[in-house]
Image 1: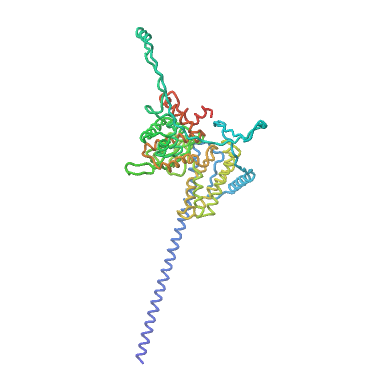
Image 2: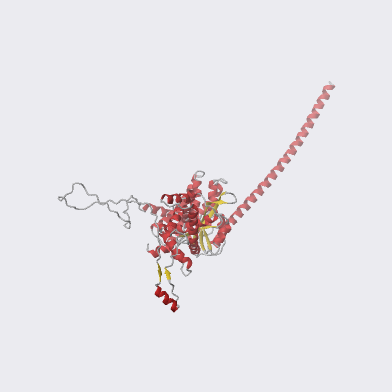
Length: 543
């Protein structure tokens, strides 16, 4: 019995010790929990403070961006009477802005509904009167004196004969004085020559038997009709003329050199205007170092109002230093895509940088599958801007009237669309297509919205992109340029032929005439090479 009491006492003692240990542990856990909760509250407070600070800094950044834009965009252009109101309290669309945008959209939609729809039915146009007619008279059978002719039916069929190669003989008769006159000249010590002959007319390529027509055909075949070099030689061979490839290649190079002074005069005229569009495109060039083709670049500059364009090649580089040197002395508006090299002109005095809405629209079109609702809304807003331009075109408004229409209808849409971009950006998937479209458009919105400042400015730079298309087509046919010199020659020819297209001049008529006349201009500095440019040539010929 005493043993049982001792065991019971031991168990009770152990129970008391365990209870005390449990109470101690509970008290320690409670203190740690309270400590953790206090620590968590402190961290949450720090996060809230940082969130507030981030929001404050973000709002300040947005305000500074708008303030910087206002100062930069209006510094070198006439002040816009409807300068954007800056929302100092945030980026929410103000009620008056929403109302102005709604009214603008209603007017645009109403105009679209009332505009008569044009139904273009195919109509066979009459054949041009200047074409030579070869008559073919077909009499019906069984006609005798009992029949009287009462009229005729005329059917015109357009025909073509292959081009004809011919030889132009320049005959210069020589004349000699008769013996009696020669003796008289000697006795009188006259300066008259005993033998005279007319001077040889200036030829495009000295000591060459290639005439202006043939040289023009070779140049047009490659740079206008995009026929590769070897195919043209085969075509000449089929006409009975076998020419060494080295000879024809030399004609290409010397013809380009002949036109180079005209090209530099064109470049000078384009860069003296006050509104240009700039773009760049690739051209494969064979590299001696790599023994293969490398991706080189041609820069394209188009004077929008004068309808002139020139291509620039600088060792195939696309670096920013090329465009800096190219546009060193330019003053006016420069319209480009979002390539970072052009960003330097945001801060250059005397230059206004414009954006391209076609590039922004393309980005949202690519994002349709990822975010249909957001992309469709953005495309609808951009479409409204283009509809305003259609209204101006339909009404044949001048630059001033177009600018007023843009201020009334397009500007409210621009204001609300910019704020929508800012608000929608957090909803996009990081690095997704919609993310890229929104960030691209918002980052360039300053450039994109400046077109409303002048009725001459275009909504996009499609005109300069269209100027690149012939080069892209040629790139698919002759594949590459043999060296840097060949690429420079291509820049010369694409520039002059691009001006022909922009001015509505047929290069088949212009180029042979220019090749025949330009040696005189190159040797007489009193003559202005600008007279030979397609738009001036067209005026002089009354075409």
